[in-house]
Length: 81
Image 1 (cartoon, rainbow, N blue to C red):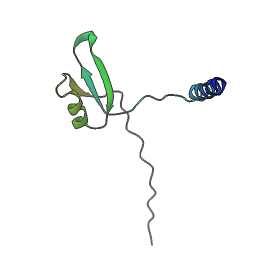
Image 2 (image 1 turned 90 degrees about the horizontal axis):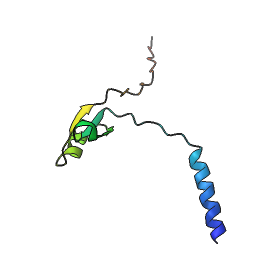
Image 3 (image 1 turned 30 degrees about the vertical axis):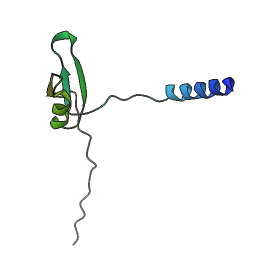
Image 4 (image 1 turned 180 degrees about the vertical axis):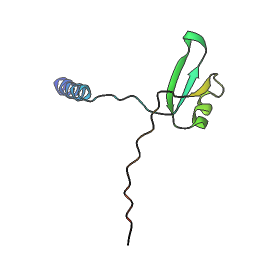
């Protein structure tokens, strides 16, 4: 039974190594604390989401200067005669 769990764990770990992580691309960041001891979380899609997160714990929200909006699909316009 231990061998089965070990094999299952090994397969799971190997599969996890094969996937690549991508940075999150969201427009708002929460800055917690001040100075060099603070942390930053750029995982918010709206300013209101960010404000709700820092509410009561301190910090502030700012726009993510590394954010790039996803490219919109190119639409073809068909003109009928």
